[in-house]
Amino acid sequence: MSKVLVIGCGGVASVAIRKCCQVSEIFTDLCIASRTKEKCDRLAQALQGKTATHITTAQVDADDVAQLIALIRDYRPDLVMNIALPYQDLTVMDACLACGVDYLDTANYEPENTDDPAFRAVYEKRCREKGFSALFDYSWQWAYRKKFEEAGLTAILGCGFDPGVTQAYCAYARKHEFDRIDTIDILDCNGGDHGYPFATNFNPEVNLREVSAPGSYWENGHWVEVPPMSIRREYTFDGVGPKDMYLLHHEEIESLAENFPEVKRIRFFMTFGQSYLTHMKCLENVGMLSTTPVRFEGRDIVPIKFLKALLPDPASLGPRTHGKTNIGCIFTGVKDGKEKSYSIYNVCDHQECYREVESQAISYTTGVPAMCGALMLLTGKWKTPGVHTVEELDPDPFLDALDRYGLPRRENRAPVLVDA
Image (cartoon, rainbow, N blue to C red; front, side, top):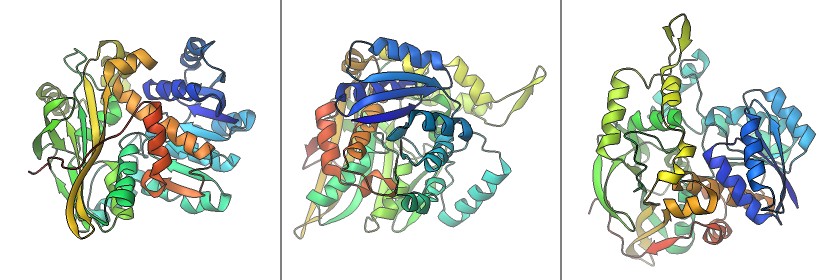
């Protein structure tokens, strides 16, 4: 029996909450909290009579540590699942420390205001020292390691699909398939079609920042950074077919480089259609991806926030999205003295997801791992004081849970390599 507080009520949070309600013997009580309580109330009403989980709702501003502390102390959960925005990771972690509660999120911290002088000073130092310029990195949350260890609390970072499941795939490959892993390629393919000329499958601010940033990868002990979208490969994905994919910087590369120091190269690729790239480039060229406020008709407006208000809500894409996703990892290395290649991945159908939880597959593939990670923590399988990324934890029970709750793994022991 566990009480869980979920911060957030967007597309991913809705999936995670619905999946928690399918495991009501563990998730006996849920409180859904968001800045907009009406969204929480609507979801709670939709689930009424469909689950044995007792659901309550609350209003909270996740930017306000004092409000978070008050809510946590009032509800007294066993775990806080932070499925709000990555901007709020640090405030939620602060509140969990103050209240003595375990923590889980789905994406690493990045600031909402990237022009903040305090952030810029730390960011520019990190760029010089580490060699990659993405605005998001784990250093802010890794700084909490000692605090969580001393408090006897567990914090699990990035427990979505990528990051999250992809790191569990890496841990599984090292544990069961290889004596030494030489290369890791993480491939994220969305073969879905929502019918809009342009829309993002998750929060537009986060998505467009990520995609428009320089790409980078880990090779021979250091970062290699390249211009945005400058490395393209065509790859044929099981269940989807041939797609163009582009090298991006992604957060799990950073943690894998730290926890898998023997690996010679780690890369991340994501598929994009030409229409998406053309729209994004046009928006970038006219300044619509900027986070710097501009003065318009007597008030300050952040361009990317205004763009977000114009674009379709990712949570609304479920009914109209058709096709499949394919996300996983391809490895090369050595087993029993012989060279070996291996891949492990999941194929997920957008319409099947919608029929089950009224969501498209992008939210589903993030929300289900969040629930499964919470399940691991609440049942003691991942309860270990400190701040951890998923590859540091036992992959076996987690992947077994994913198999059971909607994201079964597939394997290929002779995969086509990205550079074949």
